[in-house]
Image (cartoon, rainbow, N blue to C red; front, top):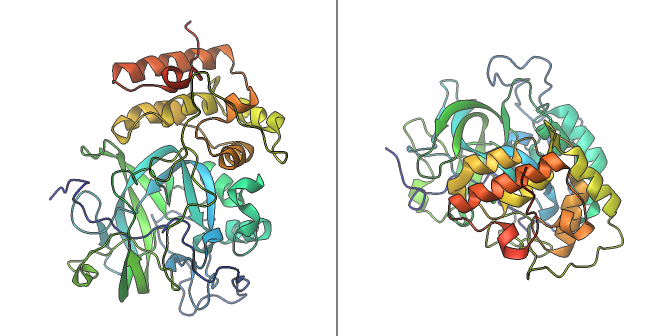
Length: 400
């Protein structure tokens, strides 16, 4: 049975984005030297994960990484690139989560999201080596890698380079990409098995959801038994699905609120996203002293895919196209995030404008990039999308 996105029960809390009120100001305990009680030595995700060390440490008190527990807002590390979004996965329909016979893994059908900002719960990193490296760089609560710090969390690089879990086509994380269609809400459920999909490995399926036009992937999500939150208001009798199905979920033990510090998220959709620069021509905000425009422009130049600087083409498309234009966004943004974007993210977060860093810093695209932007803008107009070029006179590109 296929369920329309508007009426589908939102599945699981892969992220519970930037939840505050969870022991704010209290540093979580350092990761334990001992494995979590009863933790497996490994998960057979796809039967081919040799060379991968599972993180079996207690990343939060008494619980392993795949419990997907959020203690405070800084636990979420901001990245940008391509991920799988399993927030909408669980019951029968387009994106179910089906338990394997041993009950240790749920195979969840999830959406593939290109080019958007995404968030990783530092407590839920399944790769032990990447977890330890990320904790060393960001502290155990993630507070040294806030979006305005210009410090990119190591887990972002590992995900964007397809190195977090061997043989995965894409990694599951949290994104606000569909928040304008399905708002984030929350229902707290009692203890039961649920799929902890944060940083789980996913494989391409070749299928596309006809409702959202987004590609579908299959993610191997470890199962944890405990209390959890589902990302929508549902009757509590729907917390347990039965028929071999479980929610993709997470748990925030100390409460719930959904702010978006500092004030908005660059390149995210409404209502959480930052606006575009305006009017035409735009009034450019001052560059904060801690941001280097030279570093910003260097990041655009290094976002190179077959001679096209993807940072420019993605900016020209991502913030005006909709989820119905997933193929066009993928064309504009594929490859974004394979080099650092920390200065770009920090600048756009500090000034509160989406898809704006190159304009603010005066970064100049190469000829091939400019031609690609011009063509992408034309494709947007053909789809009745008004590109940034027409809104504020930026990222217009030039014809061949």
